[in-house]
Length: 52
Image (cartoon, rainbow, N blue to C red; front, side, top):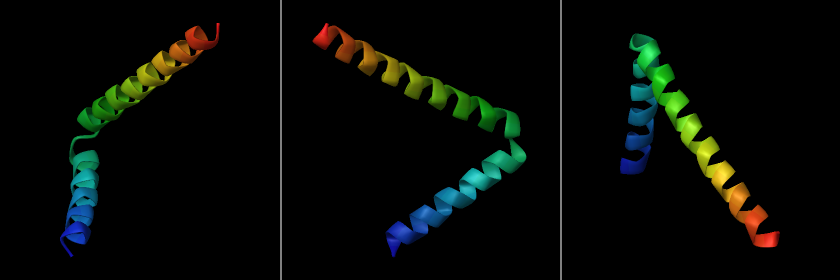
């Protein structure tokens, strides 16, 4: 029950955030995407150096 409430609350907050602060929401998602790309590049370099 609590998990379901937190899930729907998180989705509602996300929609509210995107609707009323679109520029801030875009900045947050851009920085999250950049972090994921950095992690993937680091992992790729690690594997490359491991097998080379």
